Image 1 (cartoon, rainbow, N blue to C red):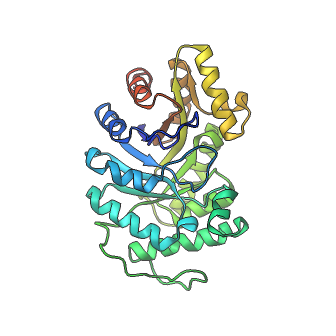
Image 2: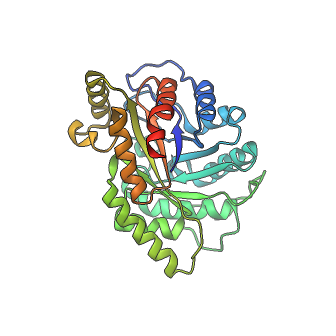
Amino acid sequence: MWFGAHLPLIDIDGGNDPPPLTRYVDAARDTGFQAISANDHVVFSRPWFDGLIALAGVVEHSADLTLATTVALPVIRGPAMLAKAAAALDVLSGGRFVLGVGPGSSAADYTAVGIPIDERWPRFDEAVRVLRASLADYGEFAPQRYYTRPTLEPRPTRPIPMWIGSWGSAAGLRRVVRLGDGWLASAYNTTPERIAAGRKYIRDTVTSEERTGVDFPIALATMWTYVTESGTEARTKLEGLARMLRRDPVALSEQVLIGPVEECAATLARYVEVGVDGVFIWPVGDPIDQLLRFSASVVPHLR
């Protein structure tokens, strides 16, 4: 299992200080992480720095790390503008960019750009196809809402891998296989059992569609993380996260990495067993210290 790190774009406690992005990427690079990622929101309950701008700002510190969006929102941003940004990130990184996309689940984001949220699924399907057509030769189709093939320069250095975000519903997994090169699942919205079922469906479907041998990664994003041996500290972090996400803290505790080293490692081991290829952790506080602690204490348990 490889590990990526979400850029600390949110201050979970509601502050407004700029995040320590370059120092965070330096720490991830130097401690064995393989990817850096950013997520997309226009409106959120906490201050949220723009993900694409943040990725561009850390390219020179990223060395050979993969840069990824986990996920970006093509319906909110518009597929042409997202394709333009993706091509730029791929060129700037020397071909190390992965474009993870999803429809988003926030009504506030859709309200902010004047699009009804109940249109997100048909718009998303079409937006992904426009992204494909804009970034590479992906066949012809007749779009209803977007211009099919804007001429974008500079071109990306190669076909950019496009991973589709899905919580694992039947319709979502069909979309992953139909439109994507990989599956991005949301760690706090899934279970190992659900991943196992989704992985079997994807493998069976990819094989039946004569894509045998195609690398089709499965990664967990938004794995909220805070490694601590203090029960009080773990409860405080978990309750703060639960309030932000509007989730039950007891149920959430089974889906995130907040607590002692052994518990965090055991949670990850269950995902190793069901075939997850990679996990993007997201520290809920002390981001650089948590990267160091995770690499030094949790990762060795999985070797």
